[in-house]
Length: 295
Ligand SMILES: [Zn+2]
Image (cartoon, rainbow, N blue to C red; front, side, top):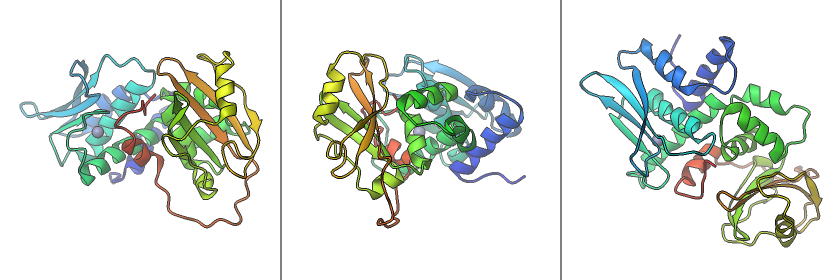
């Protein structure tokens, strides 16, 4: 069988093999890394924690032994983040190991992060991780017939061993619904990411714009700490100038972040044109210089 040559093809191939073997989710990235790569002359033979601050994951070739080592930040405690970091490094192994002998990846200290090629490689490794950890066919099964809320996406995040943010961005990438993820702090918006259909509606809130008053009131009612609220319907003018919305909220007191999932169930797209959209893993990479993008 020929080798895949795109992040999507590699991630999907390995996820399919995992499922065909009857293995359950979440996918065990360490197991795949250490077993599947033994077919190559330069396998990954070690995966272990490191204590270099600011670097979440590294993939390094050991010249003496012609094998590779994945090192990860052992101090990160956010659920789902480690699995994504390991999958990201495994993505570099399959996609980029012929280019360099060393990859150092982190939120703030991405060396050479200014370069376009470097950003592209990071986006590709993230995309690989997304398709490996959250295969689309399974994701569709998890949500079929359900109203998508942060509750449901939290369930999916547990199933896949991924963070809520990465899971929600993945859903936004493939859903036909008009919906967006909004992350705020101190009553102001840090970032927002719309699905392709929501993008056509012009749904987007720029960083620094205020969180709507009604959402702040909901946040301040005191019942949301570490909990997820049910969906509520909100009037046009709150999240979009002309669209009624459904909003679910999660307040993460750990990071003092408010996370909103906003859906526009009544949106009609007949008047909107197709346009190119940036995929969520490119977005994730470009956001990766802060703001807890892997929360
Ligand atoms: Zn990387």
